[in-house]
Length: 131
Image (tube, rainbow, N blue to C red; front, side, top):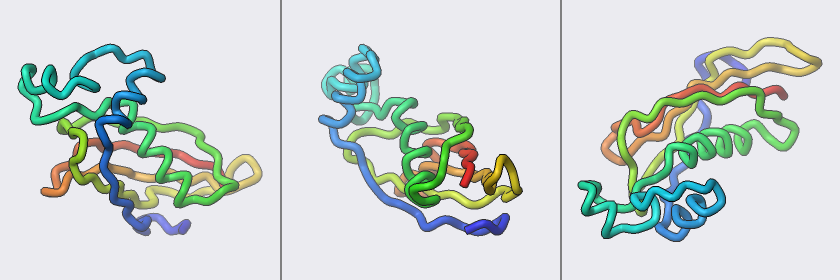
């Protein structure tokens, strides 16, 4: 779990339209493409669009699940690469970029991505943790 280049076990999931609606509500995101499928279609999307901030949350959630209950988030950054929509199969993938002692624990940096079923990255980024 701490060797640079080591892959983390991938995690597959998809978002429901209800989840996107609720995430829009709690994040005060009123853009209709995230909760109104017919409006998203009108805007040219194939379905209700996953919020960029939800992608960031999923990068962190899966990294913390992988690292265990004592892990603490230090930083996260990501870049959106391709639109993902409700119901679309997505996979979180990550590998250890670096592992160094720090602040009384082990500081890990992960290269992380959320990948669509065809292999296209929807999101790429880094997640830094302290164990």
